[in-house]
Image (cartoon, rainbow, N blue to C red; front, side, top):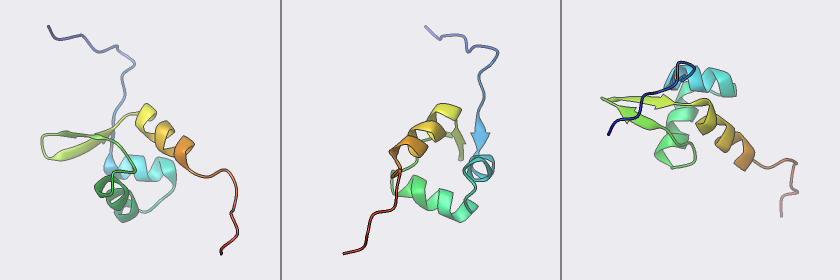
Amino acid sequence: MIEKLPASFVTMTLREAATALRIHERTARDLVRDGKLKGRLVGRRWRFTPDDLAAFFKAQPGEWSPKK
């Protein structure tokens, strides 16, 4: 059975997700390829939800770590 999506359901393209994260589109594509940014392929295009971006953002370090 297919669930009906809520009216507030929002998806973003790769370009929109990159803009929201304030990173270059190529960087976003690399993050998807490396499995660090989760999304879904719809047809041949990547789509992202706000939850996908929030999960990526929360996984990032909260402070600088000194280089060793």
